[in-house]
Amino acid sequence: MHLLGIFQFFILALSLTVASEEGTSECEFRKNTCNIVSCGLPGRDGSQGPKGEKGDQGRPGKVGPTGIKGDLGSMGPKGPKGEKGEVGELIPLKAQITALQGEMKTLQDVMQKYRKVMILLGAKTVDDKWFAVATSEGTFEEGKRICSQRSGVLAAPKNARENRALQELAEQFNKNIYLGMSDEKNEGTFQYQNGQTLSYTNWANGEPNGGRNENCVELYTNGQWNDKSCTEKRLIVCGF
Ligand code: MMA
Ligand code: CA
Image (cartoon, rainbow, N blue to C red):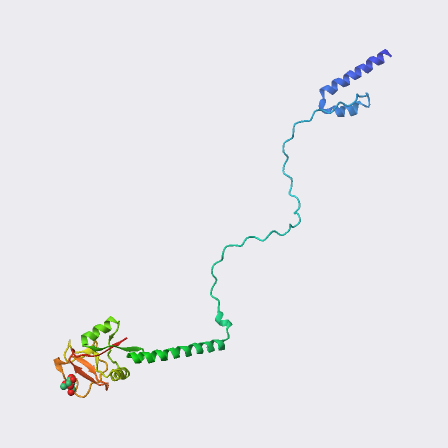
């Protein structure tokens, strides 16, 4: 019995020595040895260790369900001006024509009234030319100046129609008219204010006959022409 006690003590001492030298494999050692030698009770838990380092980020989770619709946003800035619409295409052509006819009738009525007033005041239109009485008493030089001041020229008929219009004014005012032409610069050759030679004439029989004494031209109330002194007083009609 004494020898068995010593043997048991020896084995216990050996197991304790191995356990202290190989701490990391204590449990394995216990598994192997506790079957052979009875072990003591487990020790108390140690104190809490230091906090570990932050781990790697995990993989993203699944997409969540669709959220509820948000509130209406505020109004955006004003956009650029759009191109002009084709309103005309929307209105029937017939209605447009009827509307235009009405407008034309109104314009024609207005023009008729203008014409009446113009005639009363001593103005006439021939094609695209206008004639207007400026004064009933003026010499050739006064006439040129007055018409120039009104951005016109002393009337000079270029065809029978224009001559007829001026004749009507002469008749209306019962006065001869100074025409915008003379042979002051070159005796015997009449020319317009712009220097061009005459393209139309309506001389009375025997005219021109005044030579250097009659360098201007008057239009009789019958529409015929006579060369005349430039210093008489005649009806002044401007052309525009
Ligand atoms: C006036 C004078 C002339 C014109 C003759 C026509 C007498 O002179 O107006 O210019 O040619 O009449 O008879
Ligand atoms: Ca004459």
